[in-house]
Image (cartoon, rainbow, N blue to C red; front, side, top):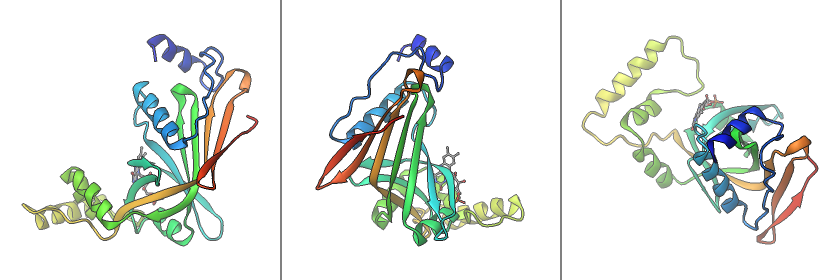
Length: 217
Ligand SMILES: Cc1cc2nc3c(=O)[nH]c(=O)nc-3n(C[C@H](O)[C@H](O)[C@H](O)COP(=O)(O)O)c2cc1C
């Protein structure tokens, strides 16, 4: 994307007034399509284009959302990592459905993903955990994510405690930490266009293929 296009996009955010009237090309494979959009978001200079909102819901139907980082995407689904004792995990274990949301404002694009959620294998989680920096690995051990923290010093002390405990050793994968995969049952690609006449394409699995429909903006 040229510098001029970026400026144009920034000035017309949400309007699509001046950006080139790029048609959303529907393809058969929404995963390849998603990867192409993510790559374009990276290339356009968006910071953390892989950040996404994850919404979960209690069994009583009360939703909650937070940002996480997408770490893998393939035909099996969309993977992120977190603490299995966190609030999101508690909700996702009780009601294993999630909604993901990406918004790449510079490109006037939004992707919505909905589906069932499952834990990835312990081996996959361990592989990713060990690819992270040592500080992040210690952080995962030290944080009782979503629990009350009376004083930040308690967290700092726990970090020191785990640093001592694992000094000179490989840090094991905490049993309370790992990945979740959202298996898509619906993926929507949204491309902002002039005069609010945006493009929306919905992909839903059907008989081993993807059914593609278009919605009014
Ligand atoms: C850009 C961004 C990326 C984040 N990535 C993650 C992540 O990959 N995993 C995670 O557990 N929390 C991540 N967080 C923190 C979460 O938004 C959230 O605060 C945390 O997971 C606790 O949420 P919960 O109490 O609803 O479970 C991220 C926050 C931001 C702003």
